[in-house]
Length: 321
Image (cartoon, rainbow, N blue to C red; front, side):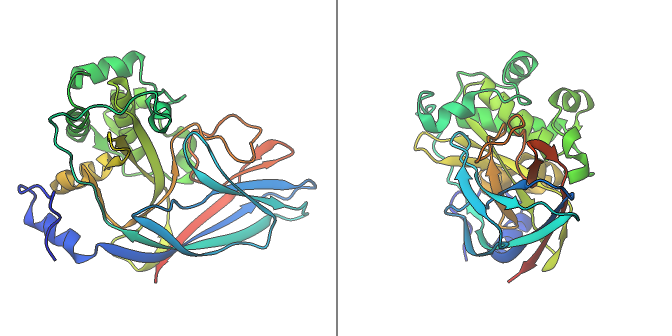
């Protein structure tokens, strides 16, 4: 097997060997969730894994419950909403997806003549706007202008932001667990402390890119441990993409590059196969609509009883197949 054609010649040999070893992975990813007892029905929304050229669902095992499927028209996130009947004890159920994941390697287009996709294109317009917790104006605009110029080619802008975050931010190893979820994503604090999880790394990347006129989006999912064939997963992972003029998306994983700087070139344009993607974007509108405001992040199951959010218990596991 030879290296991908776009692999930088300066990449360390160890990096090339690591990503020759396994470029495809198949595994079963399972959710277990439980909601509090209630004398009223409960709705539980769960994101459905992404299906694209790099990730396919080969089978799914769903609970025997009424289920409505939908897609958020703005972010493209697919989901399922399960209806749980009233119960005097907590209601628990499980579901699982068998997924085949390929290493994703996006060719880097020539910088010369590379123009922005038109902002009026519906595919990209939403990903130029600020989200409620990812602002592309104010302080983030000032910070972005200190890193790159909006007149530079978008791929150059993206690389400058990528390198800036890798060089100036430290990684918060406590991770993105359900217990910490409500406290993650404060970009001002991340800038002050110069540290963050994947949520802050990619929040800043997306904010800075959009501030400089480059459409950018989040992808939320989970890392699958590279060195295990089965086990539990404590928290989510996220990464980002910028839009290319041909309508494709160019991926970056800044936080993985921060943790593994010898692979920084790889994670600018490539993603390893040890992950599963579930949802896109921030400020997600659920289908059918939730009664709470749009969700800042939709990666963990979300539940409502009598139109009020309730906190489900969560557990995630995987097993190679």
